[in-house]
Length: 429
Ligand code: ACO
Figure (spheres, rainbow, N blue to C red):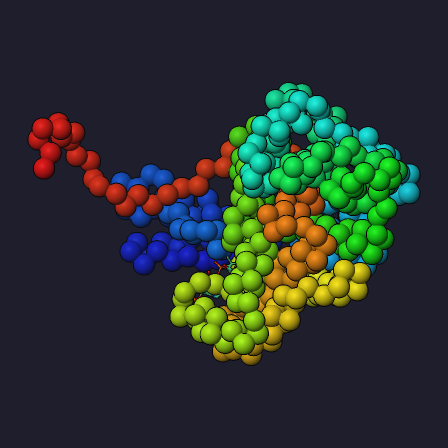
């Protein structure tokens, strides 16, 4: 018995056999069904916000939202967070397999080699206002990279793509650190090639006058784990932006500026920043019930709760909770933690959140860790963008090489005015 869906058109009595493959039907197969005698284009589907539409086939990340499963290239996130490093995970996401020792050495060398920024990038970043949001600086600078590396336009040249991958993975921490130092009026710190990927990032952020920055190994590891957790998350808003923009065959820097812009929004990568603002606004455990009441009345959302895909506990949130304990041992407890824990406890028992399957997502606790590590809230989305760079480029490259992909162009259902004649200004009421 072939795997097909039989559609009967009640108006004509005609039947259509639509093949089902990998759990989906091809939307263009519906075109053979006409909605009327004049209809040439055929039947289409209406799916605002892509609630039930797959836009690609992908081998990168698997999510089972009901079971709380997240895997990169088949490896469970829990195992990667426990045993891998961000750079190794980025390699896995980009190239499909865990690297051999020699491959990891070469990859690490390449990334270390590309961490420096062109001096003119520095000048460009100096042009921003002292209080510019670092995410705005970040996405503008990534876009500006396309003018520094015009060879990136050769998107079908494998060697060129590899070079842009090295540049992007290596340079995003430098851009993020420069954006941060700029916002607090401190001089930019050049990369230190003796340090690990995250160790060097902490060096570029926090080094003062000491000759060598001493990295705290617990904080270095915690940041690395957070980077692993944020590396990819299949077809989310920013990744869809990366693929959508990239589908016009623009260079990856321009596409990634758009992806970073999508991540900036409070419903996506800006959520951890919004969580901290929310916790500050609540201010004390006693005020939580009143806050929950307002959320339930539709006067705002419980930030860091809910997810388009996860309808159970976000597996990343579980790992983050453990990482938070390790960080707080070094930094001391974040005073907002008490409010967050109580908020979670109350929400998870409340019928409103239970029936809607709203659980803490990755951003509920990550902001508390970042704040305890000394990051201002404005840096939170930037800290998300650094590791997500590996996911964005992996997804972009997969799209570029996929023969089924074309320039992205959704359909619309037109509901505006019918054809009418232009009215001169003096005849308008
Ligand atoms: N607080 C209160 N109510 C919520 C929340 C929330 N955080 N999230 C969803 N709901 C409610 C909605 O009001 C809606 O209720 P209704 O059916 O009575 O109208 C129902 O739950 C379903 O919500 P949708 O908006 O349809 O869910 P959607 O999948 O579109 O949204 C999203 C997912 C954007 C993440 C949403 O849950 C949200 O806004 N959460 C807060 C922001 C946040 O934490 N974002 C980070 C996501 S993780 C990431 O990007 C890394």
